Length: 282
Image (cartoon, rainbow, N blue to C red; front, side, top):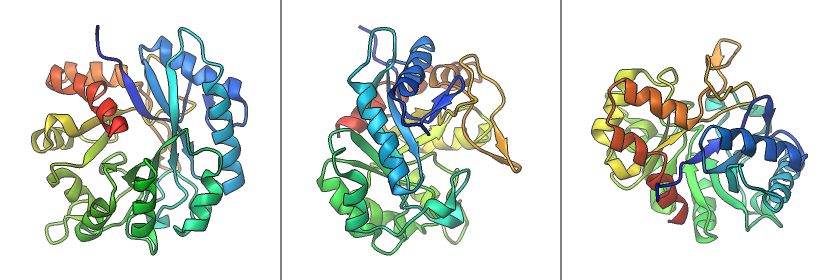
């Protein structure tokens, strides 16, 4: 039986995204992803005020109870925020970011402990290390991202329990010869998983080659970071005020293009099948 294709980071597709309280809209995302050949998805919630995020998580939970054949199975939610660094907001709203705290975490998560699978946060923020440990103890997979962390700060996040990095190189401190930063940590640490957006636009082809050459095959995860403007057949990544605002390819289409560009087919395939499964299951 072929391995299931899994996308751990999708915000939307085909005119719909997760900025909704309508479970039917969440199911339309799952249906479009299913048509693209994706078997399972974790729906990514944009950073927003707590009440808005809770309403969207509730819609994911309701959609999970109503799924049917032909859709990519929704296996949980990924919270991309709100504990992020405004210096590395990317396309997210920095006005929604808040300091990490136990009380803010409880308020956000209450009633949704069973479906929130991944949380992205910036490890350099005051209070982040303790909260990373709390999340990891609760069984949540913590990604580091939207972060200006130094190498040492990223390493501290890993030691506290973070086990992934959200869309490596995008919306984070990059490599510098005197400070390798969080991106350098993602490349060099052999245990941490790293997401990459494989459209060859978010990352230059040579940067993808660098990642493939340094990361062991089992620690790379291909994600779409797809948004409402994503079309199943692909297209140009959306731009907002001159910056990339999300992916434009499903993981299946990105994988096809990476293989056509000469990247190892087995490596690419594992990055969207066995690797995301291993990451989710811990």
